[in-house]
Length: 160
Image (cartoon, rainbow, N blue to C red; front, side):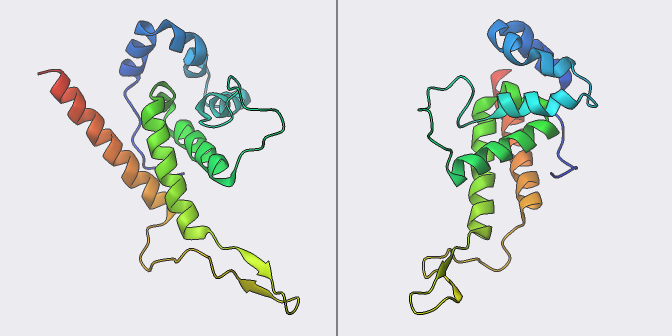
């Protein structure tokens, strides 16, 4: 993921975890793990999932859709980059969904078997790719910076 995304302030995260015991109990241990810990990414994936969470009531055997999988992956990658997003699920969900939309918009092509023969052809329902569409890494970085600016703006309004 974009290595240039800024990280959230650790003091803000600690303060939030101190004030929210339920959240601290659920994800607090992740902030105590070292970056070298092989279980850290697994835990981040578990708690950053938007769809099909371990604590959801999804029916057995019902698989996640492509959209749900891409949103979960985007959320996991964002949380690996900035663990503090685990404490701000509403912001995480909005960012992950927007990234998923942009990525799937750019890369969704369906191929079908022709009824006349065995050659592959592009589906007539494929999504149009626009010239100059930003790539995934640029999209993530831009969205993250916009979210950070909004957070700072809201914090400034709250302190007035």
